[in-house]
Image (tube, rainbow, N blue to C red):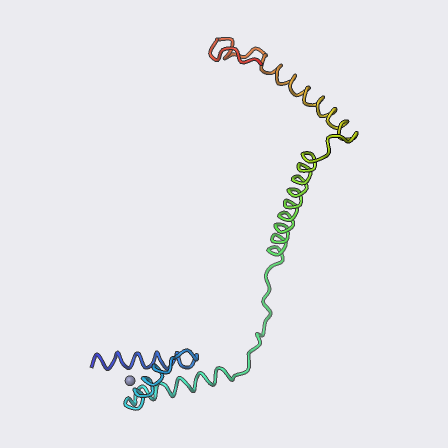
Length: 150
Ligand SMILES: [Zn+2]
């Protein structure tokens, strides 16, 4: 009795799979053999085939109402997309400028003038850094860190 129920379950599963066109020839033969002997499964398969054909041939329904998302969600999504694009553009420009500075010809007069102004900025930065490092600091006055001046 239990084996018969298992065979019936398998036959019904096979019937469903065959309707999707995915049943092998061997499984299809097993299914046909079973439904010849089992009136209950034959009735099930007939019903299943009938319902499936009606569903597949029925015209598509059109919804009576149009579903649309609130505009705020689209606006937030659009803002995120624009922000991401802007960040990508800024990154590309920054990387391009960095490579341009690194690979520019050192012999051009404009490059030499640029290096001169950068050298001045660098010197100013070094002087400022030195002033900060040599300024009296509570830790250094106590002798905790020693002399850190450049
Ligand atoms: Zn059966």
